[in-house]
Image 1 (cartoon, rainbow, N blue to C red):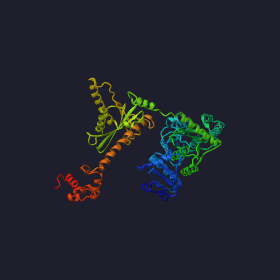
Image 2: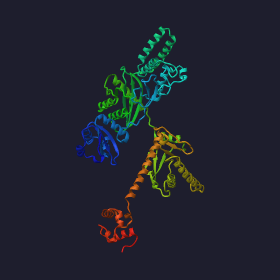
Image 3: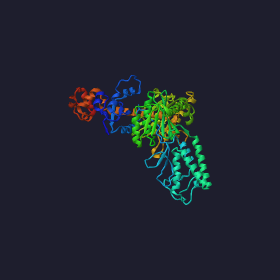
Image 4: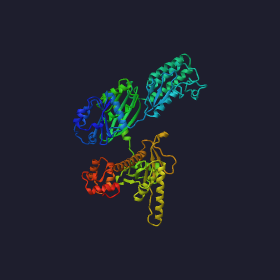
Length: 624
């Protein structure tokens, strides 16, 4: 692969026509700050990029809006189109571009692993599939579905249950043997062939070949009865009854005994709902739903993005994928997946017959999910904030607090305001930290809060970016302020002060193997840890991120102004133009400092009087 310098590629069509190759690759549009805003894959880079410059009839489309923000282009040439698919998926995951449709569900769903190379294999639950010669079954749509399947296997079959991959000999069998749920090869001499027959039956069950399995068990039962081994015949009969009950509960959706994924798409406003049905050996074994929010995305774009991003993460890919919406990339994606799996994968948009019935079923599932999906309203979310955090009132106005500094220098603080869950820019405030010096985050935060409290018009809740120490520092300031107001209130100057409540939010500490954001609440020893998609956590993170963004932006601006300022700005009569002329003539502030008076007078645009002021300023004496 060959990557070009993104700074060389400005969005000039003639220049791009001459520069872009015609081979496969990945391209990235950049905004004015060189941030990636869109990543795409192309079979022909020149032709694909050129299509973006064709005038769009609707200027409100996502592509048109993206091109208004685009200021540069970067591309990576790949050897094959399949290589471009892999690279595109990797770059989207890395940059999370604004104008790409992003599949944010990156969970690894459980599978069952059966290593048939071992003489006495066990059934293990895994979330990562490896190319190790073992058999993998799944993925299961949920951990509960996987556990139900495993319970049936444990009850009907008698594979070993020990957790070690390789069999270890024991002096006596475990409780599972006593409960007649394990053959206990660890302590009994079980022929490999006998144990292998059980493994074969488990494999048939997990592959969905239940009718074939039941027919085989019936033959075994009849053979045992003919040999007058009625105890064995009774055990097999119980296995058959348990399996038949399982088969009755399974939903046959296809008479084709093949593995298929069926993808249905429904839309309502700016919400796109994908429903994925897992069909294994003709049985519907599970479903999963994915919700996207994109008001301007076309159904074909959503379907294409889902196919590329979802299957890039999966190791168990069926040979047939049915889709409810056509996409131009279906054949290319199918070839890419075929290369990934080592077998032919077909992506098909059916228009009639049984396969069309399956996609219609998937669409109906998507529509049902969309109808049942009720996004938490602002009122519901704020009510949850009050309940979970134990607040006295619903926090309709929340202010996020953050500080920013560089090793204690040029410390600043910012306040961002959210009203009813939405940003309220009129309430944003910036503070230069004055009293605190050095690396003292707690002191800086306390100073900012003290100054904010004196301004009045306080919020219902302060959200501090930090841990327990930051929370304590802010709480002490609020308590002191409340006490002083109470004293003044006693004299009749104020009698209705409601201090804002305060919490803090901190990122997970990876060194401690923490996984979730932590919310600290006064009076509570341990932080509150919510699920990653909890609406309360999402709102708190949104406010925290906004306060952090503003603090960093304000601090960078101050540093930039400070770096571009020089001692010349303090000399009367030196403006922007004369400063530029001096620096250009002497090539630096040090040369101006060391210059003699006559040299200063000879500088372009500098009068004798101004030269004397410059010389006097640097040398502390009157020029003579």
